[in-house]
Image (cartoon, rainbow, N blue to C red):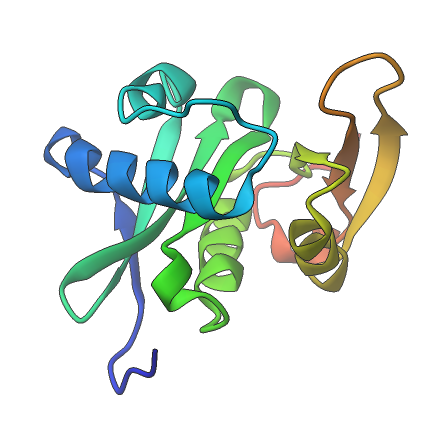
Length: 154
């Protein structure tokens, strides 16, 4: 889908939860074969106590990112499948880098090759992997210190 308008990244409001939950559900149904029986209610459970930024394009929420701020941990990054490959994920990630106080980390399921390629292109590196969990995942960490205005060298 093409757009002639700018993508806005804004803090999500409670009133946005229904739209965010639909994106979360739809995206997982289309791309996460390992998630059995996803539900709309999963969003509120999975994003509890997290900072959520939404991406808005043409007055429509088209994606979001959630950050567990205490650990600088990206828990969720989801884009409406109809709006993939428009740079929305990159813009959401850029905004999180402005907020985080340390290099962000995240977990990515090993089978999610599209997401792994995206994170690699964004400067993330693998720093760990699960050995016994299902589905198996990698732990990734951002390497772009220069993009973090609040980052302090330890």
